[in-house]
Length: 419
Ligand code: EPU
Image 1 (tube, helix red, strand yellow):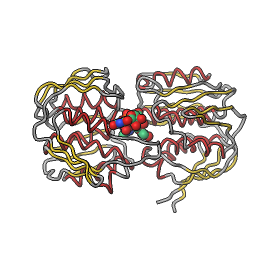
Image 2 (cartoon, protein in one colour; image 1 turned 180 degrees about the horizontal axis):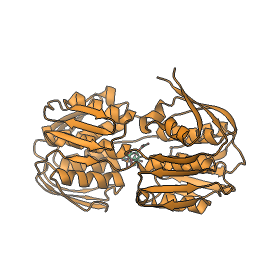
Image 3 (cartoon, protein in one colour; image 1 turned 135 degrees about the vertical axis):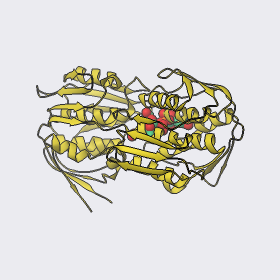
């Protein structure tokens, strides 16, 4: 399916929309459900392509997965296969999250190596080194990782980079290891904090959620649980930026401002008025042009790399210059040539983009190349005067639930054209 958006931009978005459950939060929870026999229930699950893809991976393993509305049930009673095939993993790297759970449950796993990615090289060496530290025997053959985890033993793991995925995989394997495992320089993203709380509710013994040092004492026999998935902080940010870039007033309900601290600060610095409640964020950018503000992406609680492309889109029409540096993915700049097609003035130097704010963008055809680049060019098109076509929006559909419906609810002129 090569659907595209037709967008007539240039008018402010106004109103309120609900935030969906978190994609990057739900994916590891789905993988973790493999650790228990019985039925896991995930409420507030987002209905989007990557979640469907993970459901397919779990089904290959033998799970029974259903999504009805936003409630997902995953029955892992009859799982009997420990493989994640290339056909699925190549379409979504996050499939690699089943490695830890498969090693823990079946004591063996065969998972395809993810391969290349539009954000630049994204190796999985840290996942594999850590599993080896826990005593797993790991072999690479014909594009697959073979794990023999017959005797997992707790160990000290020092991560070179606080990788989200590696931290998740280690947590899910270490619950089955005998004794104490410590992860130093662990990721402390909200999605990892949630995974720790979820595993603990299942019966694991993990301390240190939200810090860079996690301690797992195993082995634990896990039972399935019911869980409410956290709101998607990146979707919330994207919708607020849609308000900002169109000089509108947008409220995102059912979200968590505490997961977006620095982002909200940066919006305020740019001149937007932000009002936060327990479960909503309101942005008012109707008072005139916002100012250019520099950002540098970093691990949590730094500025999220997953917001960088959409932030860049906003900066293109702000007053003055801004500098955007991505320290997580130095090559995550596929959106720049597309924003340039809309009239933006951006130059790139290594992992840094220099934006010179222009008064206006103008409609054009633009191409999507990954989830967040797709969101960035869609925002650019919403701000641009006249008509734009955003092609290959299947990239956007991987990570956003009914995005065009939410934008239309805010008054945006956007249509999906099915091809
Ligand atoms: N890295 C290594 N070796 C490893 C693992 C990671 O060198 O074994 C490097 C990566 O190449 C990257 C850095 O470490 O430069 C951080 O990668 P990390 O492992 O933290 O990322 P991830 O777990 O693969 C998740 C999100 C991404 C998000 C990153 C960073 C999921 C499913 N994906 O990826 O989300 O950008 O964390 O926050 O949670 C997106 O949603 O659009 C997206 C790409």
